[in-house]
Image 1 (cartoon, rainbow, N blue to C red):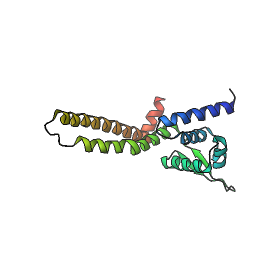
Image 2: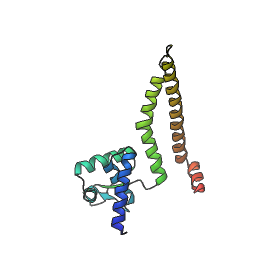
Image 3: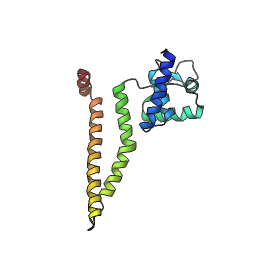
Image 4: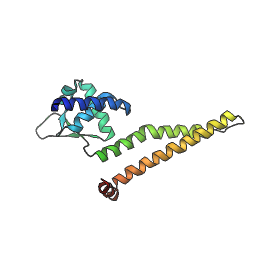
Length: 167
C-alpha cells in the first residue's frame, strides 16, 4: 500500500469511527488528517483533501478547537490560516474525556438525579423506578468521578511520571 492510499484509508476509517464516538464524520476526518500531518495544514488544503466546502471545514475546525484538540497556527508572511492537532495521545484522550463528560455525562447525571429523587408513593412500580434510577445515578457518578481522577492524574507531573514508567 502506498502512502497516499494508507493516509486516505486512515482518514476515512477515523471518520467512520467518529460517528460511533458521538461526533460527525467530517469532524473526525479533519481531526485524523491534522493528527497525521507533520506540519500545520491550511483550510484550503483540508477542503481539497477531503472534498468539503469552506463552510463545512470552518464549522468543524471551530468545533475541534472548542474541544481543545485542534489549534490555529500562524505562519509569517502567510495570509492563510493553518491548523494542527494535538499530537500527545495521552493529552488528547484526557481532553476528549473531559469534553464528553461535560457534554454528555454531566447532563445525564442531572436528569438521573432529578428523576431518582421523586417521592415514591405506594406503588411497587414507583419504588422500583426510584430504586433503579438511583442505582444508575450512583453508577454513572462513580464512572464520571473515575474519569475525572484519571484526567487529573494525567495532568499531574507525578502522574505523568508514573504513566511513563508503566509504558
